[in-house]
Image 1: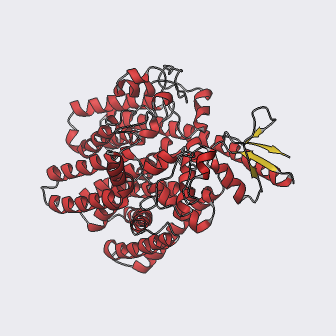
Image 2: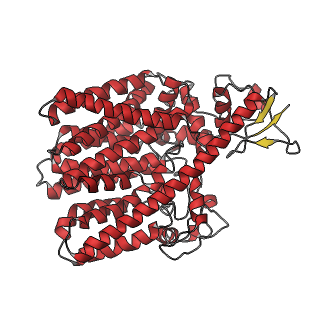
Length: 562
C-alpha cells in the first residue's frame, strides 16, 4: 500500500480486529482447559493487538515508524474512548438483548463454562427444585444459551468481568463498526488512490449500514455479522492487490469471528472463504492458491474445533446436528410466529421481494405487509426504526428503490463494454448475493445485513466511468442510499435517546423513593442487573395481575412500591 490513508486505515482496522479475535480465541482455549472466563483475556488481546500493530508498522511503513506507531495508538485510544462512552451511557432496550443475550453473558461471567460444565437446565417446578443440586445453573432460555454460537457472549463476558458494568460490553459492536470503516476505506483508497473524499464517503455508507447501526447499542448480534462480512470483502480485495501474511492473518481472524456469531454465519464464512479461493484461482494465476488453501484449512480447524467446539462439536455429539435446536431431530420453529402472514407459503425469493418493496413495518402473523410506491417515505415508516430488528423493509423505506436503480445499472454493465473493469466489484457482489439466497429468511434485514453492501459495490463499479448514464446513475444511487441511511439511523438514535432518558429517570425515581421495591422480572433479568448496578435494593416475587403494578419500559418486568 503506497497510499498513506490506506496504510493507516489498514493498520488501525486490523489492530482492532485482532484485539477482538485474540480475546475470543484465548477465552475458547481456556474453556477447553476447564478455566472459566477471566479478565486476563482482555489484556492478552490488548498485548496481541499492540504487538501486531508494531509488527505491521515495521512491514508496511518505511520511515518514521515510531511516529506512526504512536499515531496509531492515538487512533485506537480515540476509537475506544468514543465506543466506551456510548456503550456505558446507553441501555440495551431490545427484547432479545434484555432476555437471553444478557442472561447468557451473566451466566458465563459468573463462571459457567459451556465446554466442561453441565448444560443450563430449564427451571423446574418447586418440588423438583428441592431435589436438585444447588450447583446446577437454571435459566428460562436454556435451549438458546446451551446450543447457540457464543463468540459475542465471550467478548461481552470478558468486558463485563473487567468493568463490572454489563452495558459497557456493547462496546464490541462499535469497535467492529470502526474496524469495518477503516478496512473498507483502505480497500477503496487502494482501488481509487486519487479519490480520498469518495473513499471516505463510500466507507461511511458501507460501515453505517442501517441494519448494523440500529443494533449498535444493543446485545443483538446481527450487526456484528454485517460488519464482519464487510471486513471480509475489504480484506479479500486488499489481499488480491497485495498478497501478504498480515492481510491473510486478518482474513482468517475475521472468518473465525464471523463463524462464532450464529449458525448461518458459519455458512456465510464458508461460502465467502470459498469465493475468495475461487477468485484467486482464476485471477491470481494460481501463484498463492496453495498458501491460501493451507491458511484457510488451518483456520477452519481452529474455527470449528477450538473456538466453535461449543456449539458445533458439542451439538453434533449430543444432539446429532451442529445447528441444533434450529435443525436436526427435535428442531424448534422460531420463524412461523415471527413471520408476516403468508410468508411460510412463499419461496424465500418471493418473501425477499415483498419485503424490499413494502412499507417498513415491524409486523408478524396475522398481519400482512403493505405494498408501497418506491422512493416514497412516511413518518410512520421511520418511527418503526426505533426498534433494532424491523422485520419488513428493514433496510429502510428507500432501499427498495435503491435496488431498482442497482438492477438497472447492473443490466447496463453486463450488456455494455465495461464488464472487465467492473469485474472485481461484480464478483464480490455475486458472492454476497449467494450468501443472501442461501438464507431462507432473507426477507428479514437483520438476517442478511450484507445485502446493503451490494448496491454500494455496483455504484463503486461505475463511479470512475465517464459515460453519461453510468456517471449519473451511480451518483443517484449513492444519494438514495445516503438519504435512506441518514433517515433510518437518525430515527433510531432519536427514538433510543428518548427511551434511554425515560429509563434513567425511572431508575432515579426508584432510588429516591425510599420504599421497598417488589419486582416480578418475567424473565427480563437485564432489569435485575440494571437495578443492582444502580444500587437499588429489591425483593423478587411473583406479582398477581390484579395488583396495581407498574412496568419497566420496553420489558415485561413489573414492580410495586410498598
